[in-house]
Length: 252
Image (cartoon, rainbow, N blue to C red):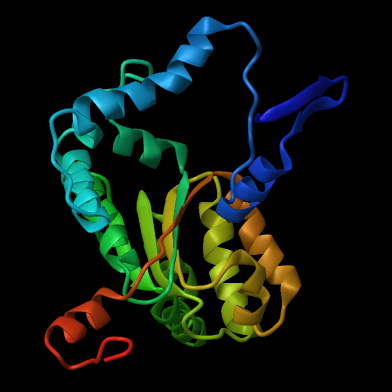
């Protein structure tokens, strides 16, 4: 059961749902009761996926499922015009300024997914810029010393979509964290950001040299409108090396 009871102060959710929501960074929103149309909109996506994707397919493994699903999303689902919004999903994403997060350990496809979103946005004629967190703060720091900061900052705030790869791979000092905050703050509710990270949100203060204030300020703006994609699994690089015999399997 998702909702344990409805009270004057709002619904009381199942603690398991709240844990799940906290893990993936979303806030549950309860539809008004006895509204069949609203309920149907929520449930229709499940039927759409079942009827248009799963029906008639042969899936041999989780990896095969992911491969087929990504290909179908690229060729069908993300190219269709949504009946309710009258827009394609990626066009809607760019307009609403939502922020997809890809959280995962190294080698499982975070950057690949971010680049794929960027390419699809380019095909939809949106301006896209790709960078890493380290390159972004280094470029802004250099521009500040050369009195070209305002012009350089525009290269990260003007595009419809900004992709920032490898957040959390290298620690940022206070001044570097402030530069990242400036970019996020300028783009807040103005443009979409895709970030990839190998740290949980609870570890972001460590990324910013222990500065929990600026970590909270950045996350507050990012998570307000966001989709969190948590990827788990073994590094594809290690899998390839294991197949080639370069890395031994466990117990081997």
